[in-house]
Image (cartoon, rainbow, N blue to C red; front, top):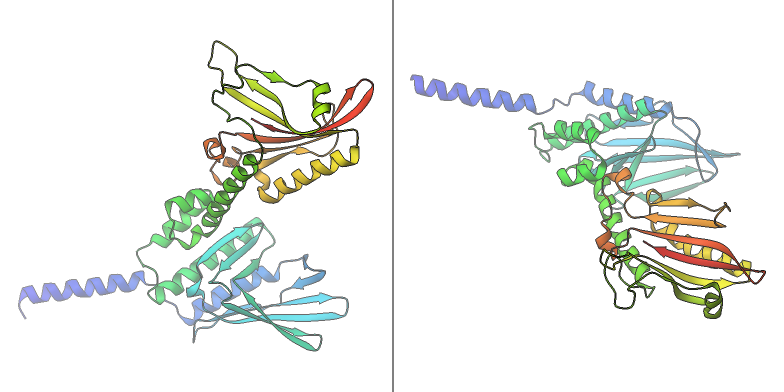
Length: 362
């Protein structure tokens, strides 16, 4: 054998050995170790409740089997004399499409309704279709350990089946995930399984922009941050005229004073002014209910109890999103509105009390 053939053969052998070293060695002991870590962490979980049931985990509540690489999970429900057992079997973690964490719970996400859970007990058996498997922990330290273990489990099973590259990107993604906010991670690594929460936030973010524009469009107000021929200076409606108008009108337009261009800074739209406290409260509650239902809590501030200025207030700030996921709602996307505030106020006119509900666009 000449030197050239020997060198080529050695090179191919080194490449094969190198590749084999990168691919995880999934032996029996590895499966046992992962199963024990996850089971032990869940077994420690206490105080878990759902629909009046106490939920507990037995010693071996999670298992990944060496022979077929499929997993099972189980937990118990108890309420008074009723005891139920929920079992999920034949779970292929190489098919997981997402992994994310929230409040000491880790969610492994799969294609829609691809997981089957059987619930036994109380002389009955039911089948429930699931999209995710949930893993519960007691502390922040346990959550981190659970997340790392599940991430390694999914990544190694995917690599074992050739569904993920073995070039170390999965390790890099795991490190970056701990440093970046979910949305930032999604922007940087949109195809990573760890980008699932960021992708969900992006979809939710777009939904909230659509709702904000629909909400603002209901009210015939002039465009903010622009000039208007109808409002060259600040306009304020008197209480007397408000009472005459009754409901649904512009009651204030704040215009930037000279020497700057006469652009509109804010608009107050009166929904109702009435002596009927219950009616005004109802109008206020209806608007607040819709806003709190459609916006994430990170956007919303305010108080529902009287203070020295108002009976109640709620504010939706479109730029507070940065604290949650690292992304604001640009105000140009919501008709140049930076915030929407709803006020429930008490006015006095000729010795009589009037209740006013307004929306303030700024």
